[in-house]
Amino acid sequence: MASSLTFLLLSSLVIFSLTSHAFSASLSPYFYYKVCPKALPTIKRVVQDAVQQERRMGASILRLHFHDCFVNGCDASILLDQTTTIDSEKTAFANNNSARGFEVIDKIKSEVDKVCGRSIVSCADILTVAARDSVVALGGPSWQVQLGRRDSTTASRTQANNDIPSPFMDLSSLINNFKNQGLNEKDLVALSGGHTLGFAQCFTFRNRIYNETNSIDSKFAKQRQSSCPRTGGDSNLAPLDQTPSFFDTKYFINLVAKKGLLHSDQELFSGGRTDNLVNTYSTNPWIFSKDFANSMIKMGNIKPLTGNQGQIRVNCRKLN
Image 1 (cartoon, rainbow, N blue to C red):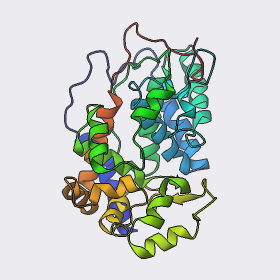
Image 2: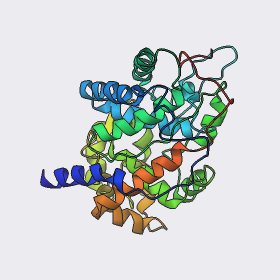
Image 3: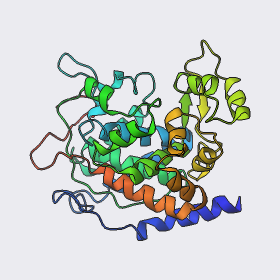
Image 4: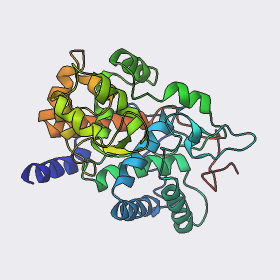
């Protein structure tokens, strides 16, 4: 309990010590300061309510943001429903029967538009801020979110299938995947630490717990086999670490002990280039919190639509 409280206190201080970043000139943390000062507090309130009702929702919203940014940038394309002209990303391999939290984003959009008096806050900004607020609600660090993104008018299931990293990837594939987004190895390890929150479905780790031997703790494998049979039960859930509703360093401690749930997670500690960073994060919650926050800012600034690009959707699920 003491270590958890210490981690929470350290995390809350991260916002004051983040390093500087080269932001797009069109983005600013004060974008809505004058036009709708109640926007960000409203997002925070709805997120806190949602997480209080179901703590798993925090991880789900964080994942939505991640999967959005990795497909043509942080433009809320993941929120668009399928139509004759929209190739929805919701049915991509990584999202189908997996991505969740859309109703919470709808609720936030409705409440924000109400306090602003019109549709002035983009769905892309809502999702980016909601991801930050979800992490904070689960005991993680805070950071200053750059704002001013606009919403896409397209989506791409094909692009989602190609660009969202797979739980079956090896280390070199993960490094290249993140590099394609302008993210480095530190970003890869830090952002993977988001798996300190949430759950994974059986089909994503079945091969690891039954067929991998050298890279997995045998007792851990047997424990996970009890709820993930060789056949069937594809959607059965298992926590990504022992404390799936609290932001901490258990994820990295598990990797060092060969108890990473996903193959892609354990690849970060498998005798390769990222081992040292995993070791560092496993014993230094302050460093992890700081790096995670910095990498979230960096990811949140992948190819934003600004100015007259895109639109500000009235309904996050469809085009105006």
